[in-house]
Image (cartoon, rainbow, N blue to C red; front, side, top):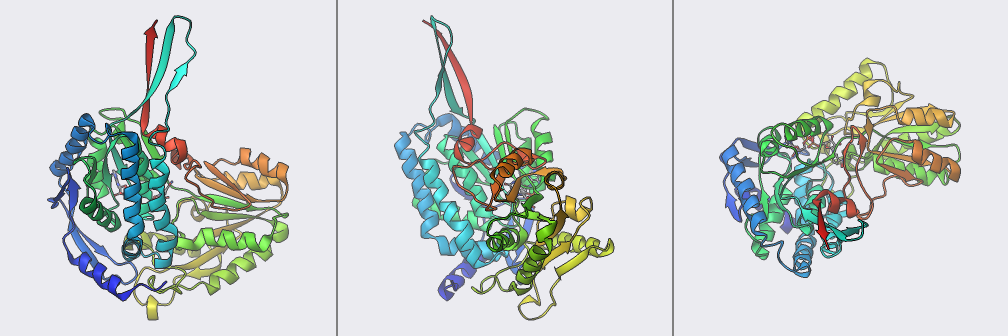
Length: 498
Ligand code: NAD
């Protein structure tokens, strides 16, 4: 869909207004480091804002702690809390176009992707967790006669929600909805590269709903300053983090220094997708796998960046992928005909360019892609063509490390054992996919593959009810479904002598 001109003008005007953090129900001007945001598609300045000082961040944690102790929100009847959660979802739904446009301007993904992929789930996840507010039961355990042991599920306290820049609003809402449904209070730290969609959401929320001050706080600033200080605070009962493995490890280290706290870590990936010789409906499988790899310009944690293809169909799959890649339209993310937008920010673009150079240096055979000519729509901006490497050495850096861009490695195999060994041959374990008509093979591989989620015959299916998360260096814990409810609560055992 075309961006309505009136909407673009309105958002451009909004971008020029001052951006503040939200602490204890008040808008607060940052006294910390100034940050300039650029539109990744044009390299023009989008917005400037100031991050918080450490003292201001501590005010936010204090406000969340005070509300947690008061439980103004938590003591409301479950039905009323559910109504409030659904209203939050409604705010996103009623402002979908505006929020999608902000997402595109700050992240570089196409407006079509923001509208179709990011926004619907950012609203609906509130409805899903509104339904849980009165459905997480305790337990009674079978202790001996004369005693009764019942087990309560209680909230944790102040939860720090730290999110990355690839799905700025969606990944925040994935955490915010279950954290509130379970009566915690939160301090949300958006990525310093993409805070704008959540800032706008908080403005809309503040104008429409009378929530207790301190229930939801939003703290702006750099990860190494504000994020780090949030992790260091002993008043933060839990950190739910989505981001890189490198920062995830720092958060784990910081969380064990002066205190201990539960963590959810949703980290990086280098996921495989295996095509067996009996792949059902091969053309559709290729189309789907291409789409889940290259949509959102390859900036998705669970995308399949390694295709492991049976030698008998290797050439056919490789040719079909290259044909699609060459026809893929890069350009202005606001144009409804654009299929791939700009990589999110300059440093990230430079990191992808390093991998491209490394590929040339070690003599990888590139079937297509690289950097586009700097002309027309692509004269400015951080653009990388969909890039496919043939028959890659499985131990080279491009095959081992998370690139987080549109770079795909292909590997041929002959036996099932070889396919499994190739698939498991990275430090990551976020997702894995496989295509086969053989049901025994499918179930055997589902057990053998080291990943938090396995996709059989359709890569990349997600559902609020299905757990999401990684093994190995892709993280700790699971989100979604009952798993987020468990992740934001703790168990208390009560034993009674009858
Ligand atoms: P990042 O780790 O650099 O940053 C993530 C968040 O952490 C940001 O808000 C950042 O400001 C903050 N941060 C940075 N340093 C910090 C510190 N020292 N202490 C506390 N917070 C700090 O990640 P990114 O570049 O924003 O996002 C890309 C990464 O996110 C990729 O590795 C991708 O795989 C991962 N990711 C994982 C999932 C998942 O569900 N597993 C989903 C999306 C993205």
